[in-house]
Length: 108
Ligand SMILES: [Zn+2]
Image (cartoon, rainbow, N blue to C red; front, side, top):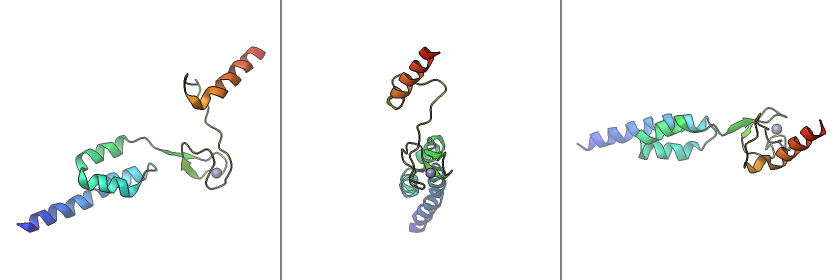
């Protein structure tokens, strides 16, 4: 009878690789998501599928970096924050940008 539990444990350890791989491909920790998958596979799989992709490409060297990186770990150069088409009011990252845009419009 103990053999059944061993089989279930082995199956969970194999299945947990799926959400771990999906999450790792989005720039997240493979180990954390693997453990999450072993403990709670039913929740880990949809959570991994729905997780936001945390990766971005450095505009200077084209290497993959975290999307919130300010300095690229590969080329050590500063990464300019991406300016959205319509700046989001209240987003601290764009406070200076909004002022610059307003000044630019006044000058025209
Ligand atoms: Zn770079």
